[in-house]
Image (cartoon, rainbow, N blue to C red; front, side, top):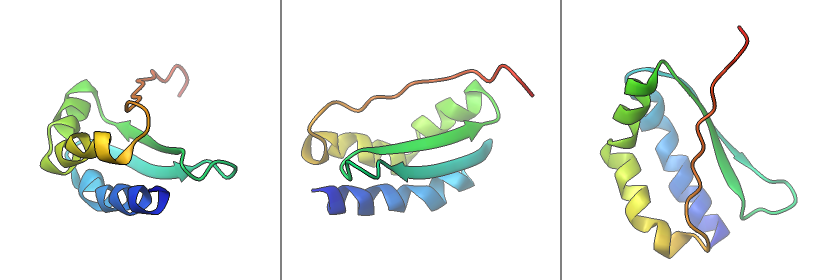
Length: 83
């Protein structure tokens, strides 16, 4: 399933980078556990994040999580404190 999940996640990069307010959107994989993936993304503001979360390409992934993931999707939001 790792390869299938990676392929699905890779398809999110181009449309997610095209979302309004996207500054960066980078996919990472744990080098020791190839089944662990993380998107590091920077959005202009909370409105841009909410817009991204409502896009069809992301909603499609959310609908596939039961099939693709062993554990629930974990999304955390961090606030930058230095410039």
